[in-house]
Length: 454
Image (cartoon, rainbow, N blue to C red; front, top):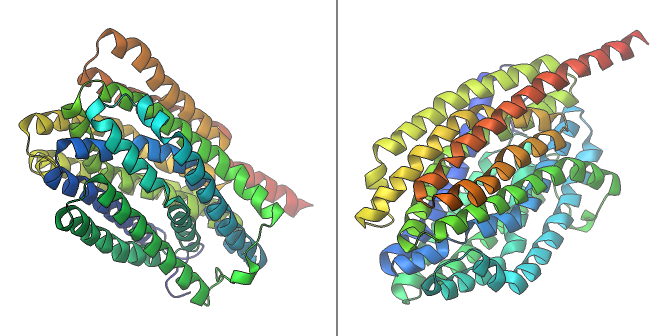
């Protein structure tokens, strides 16, 4: 297991940094390749096609977040079993996750194809964007089985401390995605359908690469095709952790759909600007999210290895590193915001509106830099419902209430953006309070001491 990070012994700071940075690079590259879709279609197919691709982001996230959350359950179960040195449970979780990914992907594809027109209509996109939006969404959804499979496969590798293999697979498929974007849109004069087809093909390649790697590996997470089936006890553990996280993601995405509908009601220029800014701000988000995932995985393994003190140290180091690295990323994006936004569209109005979004979002990220590791800390102990509930109330309820009250009274882009720092701040505070109340590592110590006395 030479590629894997030993999380249960030795130093932590350097290992967390290595794990999180590699994961952040993976996320950033993933977003870079997604941004290439927007940039290519924006430059060569126009602002309307760009809005059609970018305006679908909340819908796509809504459909996949449930199973991405369940893949987080896979991560925690495998990490804990590795910490316990329970190879049997690891193999059961690995093979069960494949069934969940494939069945879930097919279900989402079928459901999405049926409701795509209604969903796009719910987004209130302008009439000139509607047809292209439906076309892009339908093609994209055909690739959901391989998209979810990649996410589950990546979760398997990361649970044992291997972040390099998913990164390699992503780089290969991402380069292919960009090449196919240019070939289809520029070479064959296609618009959104070319970008969507390129994305599906690239995701197929990345999932295939990871599947081959899991079959050929000699590590504990090795896959045997004949052993792929559902193990009920393991599935139950995965769902107990993953479903709350997935439902949280779905509700979060639903709230963003409502917010996106408000943005869409302000016209094509605002849609394009918001889409461009989203493709920049999310680079900083991936850094924060990588520390949330690092906290979950490191805590999961150390919890399984009965090392609660290391769990608390993981949380502290992840928060400190998160604030330092994410803050630098936010500052750099803001300093070069005009030039970066111009990569997507050179319209001065698009750049101006996009800069407004970045400023408000990054204020909110000051709270999320703590919230992501705190959430990951609870999930590492298998506590998934509590952070999900805090996020649903603090983010989703607040944003929905804001759109239907404050924004309705004063419909402007700035008024929409004000809800982001407010909702992120409230959520971070709520999760911090819950961590202080629950004290999962200290509770574990008491159980351990009691068992030792017996």
